[in-house]
Picture (cartoon, one colour):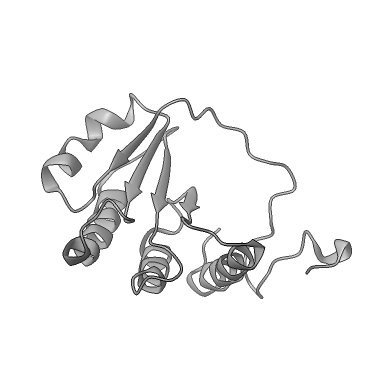
Length: 146
């Protein structure tokens, strides 16, 4: 557990400092996108202006044999579009899955600056959040994510 004195310090050397205030954004409409489906990805430019959040879902809704295609589709989707005021989120695979680590390593490296939220499913306790938080800080530092 972090001491209060270290609360606003980065979790890794070179990582961005934690927010001092909670960023407030309207999130009235979240559109879940299966990023492995090209037909859905192709409609994204017209959808972005109509929703508050575009969420690339990599989790349970994606069949196991499509997990890698979904991750690659999410990265392509993030690269190909300008989101403006619309937030870009992803729901990664669970911590106990064989896909989570690659989800984080590849997505943060490729489009970390465009990503607003990483949703972690099936959290079993604060230790899961601490692990993801520390890992993301290291990845942000490694890839120069601001």
